[in-house]
Image 1 (cartoon, rainbow, N blue to C red):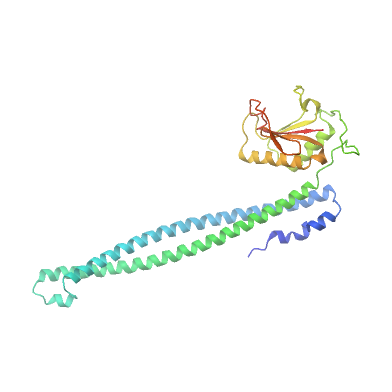
Image 2: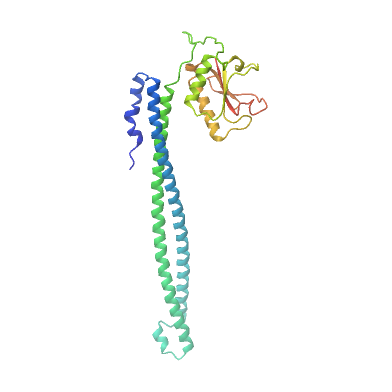
Length: 311
């Protein structure tokens, strides 16, 4: 059996207790470690794909074997029927064998029975071949079914290993979450003015760059805009992480990514200084999602982007 990669990584990742007790490593060390883990994940994904391909071939072979089995069973049934018909005719004709028929006065009956005997012999041969074919097809189908089960278990093991390593990578990445600037000793956040060419606060910039490092973003990130709509964008305290080109519904993959970004921002809100998150016509300030009123469009309802506002 394949040795679990999770066990092989035990030394690298350490136990949960040891990790909690150990001092937080610097970013360069964590990035190097994560790069190595990503290579291991790539190898797992390659092995996973290979197993799926092997499984697909086995499934096709099993289908072919089942088709052969059905044909063999049909031939077997037909041959059995023919042999039974001839045997019944011979019984009803009161003639037990061809030698008896050779000395009979009714040569037309003898010719008929001789033909029937030849046909019976031929059908018996077909019958035997069908019986053997049925047995072989059944054995092959059973063998392939067992092989598919084994392949499926191997694929599932690879999937679990890949998910475990990815989970460990995410835990490592979460250790890299920076602290938002401007936090007072009482836990509140000091007001900040927008700075730089992007016209956003330092706290917003830290959040944006942390998400850029943490996730593979498919589209642009829009933060400052001059239009005063009562929100944080003109104050440099909000960013929109686009999940489509804008105005169109995201793919299922990008909806999942938007979910992950929203969950990550809420999870790390206290460290970063996140005020609230809006995504898919819902808002979350840290105490759960609440539905929002319909604003009339995909963009206005935040279906095509994850919005994060900062203190």
